[in-house]
Length: 400
Image (cartoon, rainbow, N blue to C red; front, top):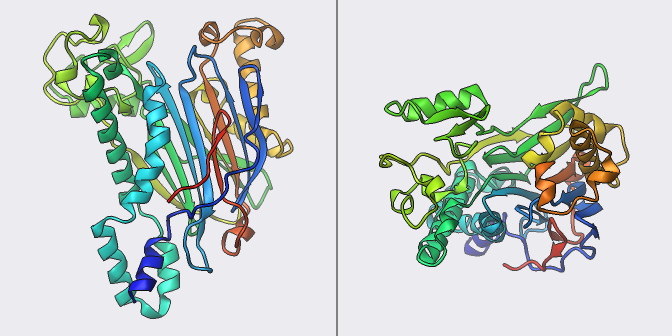
């Protein structure tokens, strides 16, 4: 029984394996991986840099989610859109996935698995697959990542106080046991392309909740959480901002708006509030949804806000649907850059010549990960190489 239990507890851990053999290619400020194979289908990734230091970070992890021969298998995608610097997004890229795996082995989750085994002995394989992940596990992984970065800020505050004003959006998708889990803080976005049986067209369905105060419901949420602060959200230069400082209401990091002890000298004056902080202004709590994958679900687009500033959900889905899979993430980035150039009444070829840093005046860092959902593979795929790849070209062997 103990051996079986330990195997089941491994259902959401990837075993050690070689990393993906190709790290993608670099073309100036553009990095791309035109095509790869995750265990549930194909994928495509692309990143273009605009900031002086790349603030977007991303990763794809895919492999068997169990030591049992019967599976299950799964894929993890993370898109982390940093702001104020790259430190938080890099930290999230290094730690969130590891925390997710660690949370699956905590005592409470261990007890949960024990109860499943005792209650459903005859159907334990089904139970293990359906329960290979939970929203609570994802939430705790976010909490652990937030606490970890707070520790970094606390340690570096005496010598590098501005790190308190660095943060990151954090979008995660996990496909496991026929279920798709989407978690988000900030304004990166996950969009599903779903085929309509009657017409054959593919429509866009946004699966992630956003936390940008340009959205009226998010402003209302902020006012309800801070009823004693009429200036919790203000319109500044025609842009809605929390306390006139930041456009998102949830993030990892940004501890200067979460902990009063980091909103003081020697932090730059522009970040310091005029009145004492009574409670955290920003939240690191993710919005999490779960979705049972259907046969007519075709693909997923995970992207940082840099893409969605230039095109709508349906425009992105149409591009993916109407072009070859190979290089599709790079095509989405190119279309976004063409849209950015058009807004400034310049040629795309001229935009490409602009160096990083200066490029930020024309568009943000853009990260795109397209995941194709081959539903005939999901319940039967076995074996094959595991994949661990970072947007920007870094690949790593898996470690337990």
